[in-house]
Length: 274
Figure: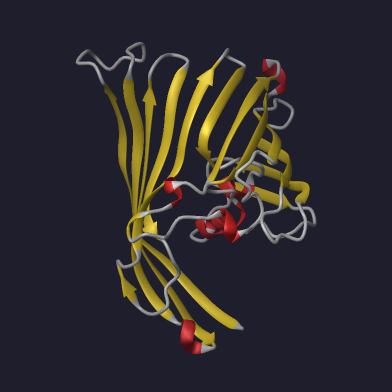
């Protein structure tokens, strides 16, 4: 099958950072509870052309809204969210702001036990590689969707360490399973609820899958370098052949000044993450 594709972002507008205390007092960082976050909107066009077979050729004009409010209840406790409006299915023909739904990507409670140790629980996107955050260009977001572990429910924790002259390093552990609750659905155009009968890796409704990434940055000896290496295990779902496990990402991102950066992503041989 041959498919040529073009993607044009007609506009990309961040509607700003908002920080509003729930109380009626001033918005200083010492006031709790308070609300902060940001909203990003994108208006775009995606066209598939010169396709073989031609049945999948389509022009798609779409809107994407990403809202990321953070509710801070105290210095240690916060609730992190990410709510999106975007296409919930690929186009089958030309469409104009159709097949769009509102859904929650992240609903996560975080508690900082100390400056070094944080625990969290809720709906999350367990991190295991760096490239999904660092790939530049118009198609970077499409790459993200292929390798991110979205729509997972889990618990975990992270530990940060490292002397100032040797960089900042964080070790994280998450155990999770695919979201099969009402939060897997979308509003407006409903993408449907995920069921355990759908099968697939990590669709177990039990904490049998886990990710263990180590990441670091700000190394004096290698300025501009960010690294991430992660071990990933995903338990098989119903009718699955076998579990998936391996070193899922060995990633390097190197900032070469304010204009240039380089990303290296190496992935071990393992079943597809989709």
